[in-house]
Length: 117
Image (spheres, rainbow, N blue to C red):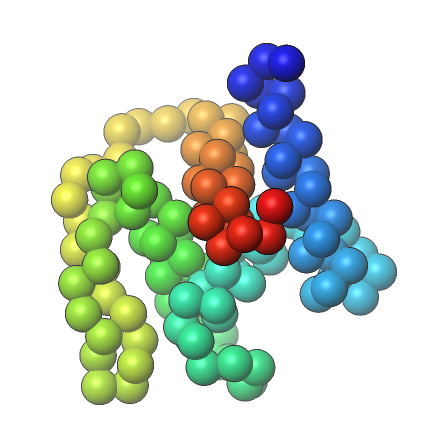
């Protein structure tokens, strides 16, 4: 099986699991999964978030997802319990499709570490 096919199968499995649990009958997209990871990483449970908080949650998730690739490193938790990351290496210029593949790879690694798959 090719690396791309394995990634697709593992990512599809994650989508199925998360969509059943959080999708209300709809299939979750990449942004929704990133948002869920941000909520998980914040660790405050189910609460109502403001629009700015939702963007910050996605930023937290992206930092956490790209940490194993050497782009970010956890720095500290602020007084409100929000994690902060520092940039270790700037992301190279990526085309849209390349960004999507990188994020899918990162999501698969994240959920393997969480033992979801």
